[in-house]
Length: 340
Image (cartoon, rainbow, N blue to C red):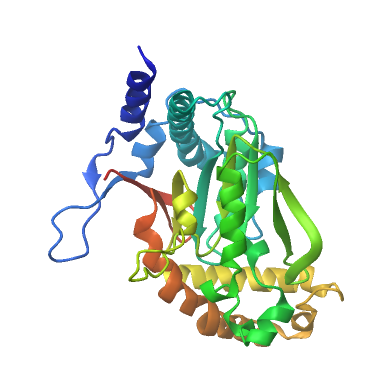
């Protein structure tokens, strides 16, 4: 089998529709869905013989503030997903090798980039951490890095200057040019690329600190607005979208009223832990009564995070290759895989 035939076979393997029923369409004029959906049991069956490579102690470390990972969740949801991604990575590596031979390059390795999107408090970070741990255990791509787009927020001083502190997390609060340049360096196969570091404790970008990415096999990029398209100019000279650099993208989905409850629960949990440190940016919330803290959390959710979800994040859901749909206990109830 020659290079091109092998690459085509791999792409056919990862692109073959394997679901049961398509997602219900929402537009009255649309007679099909670009996705095939799977119940939890149907998706779990696709794990086949993929081994469980995480132990309970690791699951505790990978869990979120309010989301406790279970062995069942990893086995039924994340192991089939890691198997699928392993197939995609293999196909991409094969195509990169074909391109390198065509161009006469000796080293055609290009990092495979996975984007993870979704609302505040929906569990993006947990999903990204689990995937990083699982994918690094496959022998063909042991080097896996994770970068969050929080580091590409403008520093608080700059947000204050622009009057954007109450829009933090909205698209305009990010240094998009810096993020695009970083992704360009990674995707071009540069030996070293640096991403800024964000501290949730200080609620700010940490000056002089960086996450160094050294040509990994896989890079996971997690963030609120990573699937949002840019506005297209009339002259056709648009800069790339962040998602243009992704080889695969995942959207973590849940009903907005459920995410609201998770956000408030997380706020109250942090109020009793991290916020108690006098050095924490949100230390002032630690002294609030439970009723006052709950009211403040709801105010922040409705005036900032829910607005961002409705205006900028939720509209990008169907740009994702895969949608993980959660129920009200953080348990993933269904999976939708794009087929077109």
